[in-house]
Image (cartoon, rainbow, N blue to C red; front, side, top):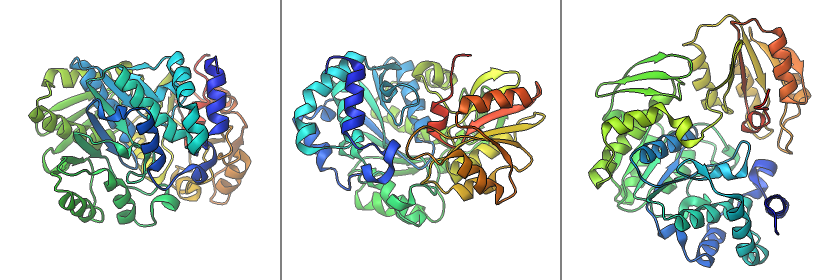
Length: 426
């Protein structure tokens, strides 16, 4: 393979990919990832890591921590998934995507083991990230799990700190049908004698985390026991989060971010004790420019001002609660919801949460997992929600813009993959 596009075509065609086909791409052990790491000379052991899991908020929390380390002058690797527009969004150093030439040379290097063990797309991208961070001599790398924790391909690392954001209903077919079962899978990232921070805890999951931490002799910190949230002021594109010990202005302005910020602040406290130079003024500056510093997209992201158009990757019940909480803090005339979902989510539960008084535009991403827009509209009709149907999300945006008044709010949500197909050029 000589070109970047040929390389991507090979990876997408050759390797089972969860984003596209769902559960069939998931391997139920770490054997392939360990084989890949051994083949590469165990690059994951060549830099310190922080490991992050959770139902929602792990992406935001990963970018917050990356922004903080970058602002403090550390060469910072960041591995997240999935990507929105460019595969290389998954693998960044100091906010810059890895080069196309690296993706091609890495794939050529690992082709023999790909042919031998037939790994998943995710298993190969995890190895690619580790190899790049080692090659770049990163001071630290923030590693976000893909799905779950215990059997997630990223769970071959020995981090200096683990962070679990929260537990909610998602991927039940793979992770379990009760919150404690799902928590057990996420708690699989807890390592021996390694501190773990829990950003948000509920009565059902607290004993699970406590038992896992106790069994591993891992110090456990429930962030809410140390940092008390006081108030929130929304300014549309940024918000002020007031705690008992600190006030944070953050350019991820969703009210729900108060839990993620609190978890990250508790991590910072522990990291300082380990000797990392994360001064308060640097931390506060980092929170103000997460998107600029790390290139984060799709988290309450404003694309236009009049009418206001926001993108949000909320796609499950927990994420919807957070999004509705956010909407309740804002003042606008009428709401236009552009939504599309994937087949393996609890579509009925999410639809049932949406405000029926909004105007609806149903669409779908162009991947096999996507629920066709017409089917989504039919499901919505069954609960009294009526709307227009569009095969392309950008056509839906055009229609919403035509129907909306200047002080209305348009939001695109329901699927990461739908948001990924939004055109960013007008």
